[in-house]
Each structure stands twice: as structure tokens, then as C-alpha cells.
Length: 116
Picture 1: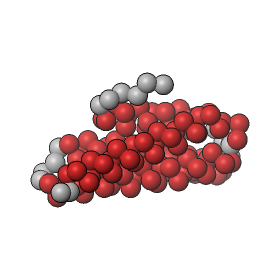
Picture 2: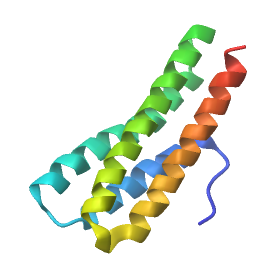
Picture 3: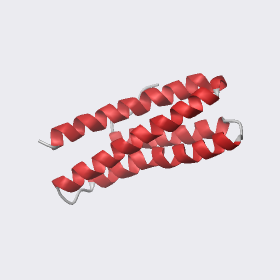
């Protein structure tokens, strides 16, 4: 799937795809709880990136970008759990894990370039 170049759009699409993934999962206790966590963290990636773009200064920009990256790492954690416990949805979860890792790398690159 072609990904948008605009990072705000890309993080929005990631959060949306995570929600669609969670909707497809069987309604077990662990899927429900892990899915809630994934929904929160995946949405926070984009929300914090948007906050970073409305920066109040260089320190605020870096701080918000680091929070977005932290939320990406957390999203990957929840995706990995759901991935292993729901093998019938491997293709969906593998694509999301790949995308969140790409987002984390992009955010890390932005952080390293803006922190200098």
C-alpha cells in the first residue's frame, strides 16, 4: 500500500488502520484490553506529532516528538502481543508492525536533526 508523504496523514492512517484491525479481532478479554491500549497509543502518535508541529519552541518540539516516538514504541508492543495471540490475522498485524517501525524511525530521524 502506498503511504502518504505527509506525516500527519500517515500517522492518522496508522491510527485508523489499528482501529480497523482491533474491530476484526475475536472479543476475548485479552484482545479487548490489549486492543484498547493499542487504540490509545496509536492515536497518540499522530496527536503528539500534530502538537509538535504547533511547537512553542525548540524544546517543546523535541519533547512532543519524543512522546510521539514513545507512543509508536508502545503501539508496537501491543501489536506484537495481538500478533502472537491472533495468528489468523498475521498479514494485518505484520503490516501494522512494519508501519509503526517506519514511523518510529522517521520520528527518530526528525528528533536527531532538530536536537542539534
